[in-house]
Image (tube, rainbow, N blue to C red; front, side, top):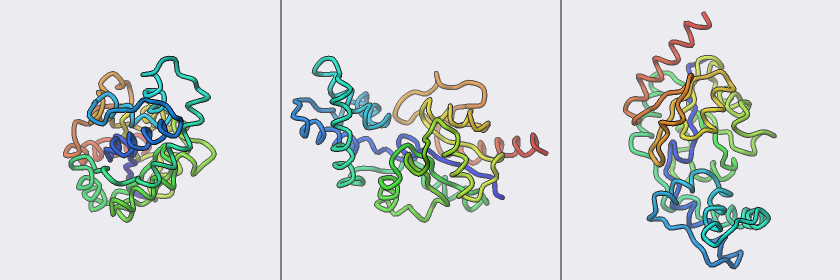
Length: 229
């Protein structure tokens, strides 16, 4: 089995914020609510990468107290709008795609473990022409549980053909850090959209950019190999 690097998707591999904001704004129109998220506002773009309901709450909060029932009513319209335009403005973060290619060439298994619904994640990778670049993809609804439960991460490693104890997760949120911790694996945290320095604790560390991923992956997976030897 190969050493393995698993990636979160939104906010880690890709900047999906503009397409997500467009979907959220379509959901507000569906609800008949005169509010919108601003694609030029860094705070709104960062909120977009925390999930659909987070976006809905952020937009509705501009009108006053948030009704969670209204958030629930807006969620499916948001998903429907996103499915229709999942890859209009989305791009890989600088160096991400090249880093994945280098890992594959070095003999690593690579995969995606995301809390985006699997169908949308697959459609996004197809839209970016990147489906064949990853050995596995597990989404929010692939299994009965989702991150921060460790099982989606473990399943991604299994499907990718990675060694279960020579693997790391690259992510950008508390959810990713806690998922890796629950699986007993290291986590590299990126802050391309939102600062993550405050999330670092034992078992996790910062990754400034993808140019540094190769060395970090080698160091951490080699350390795991020595630990389990």
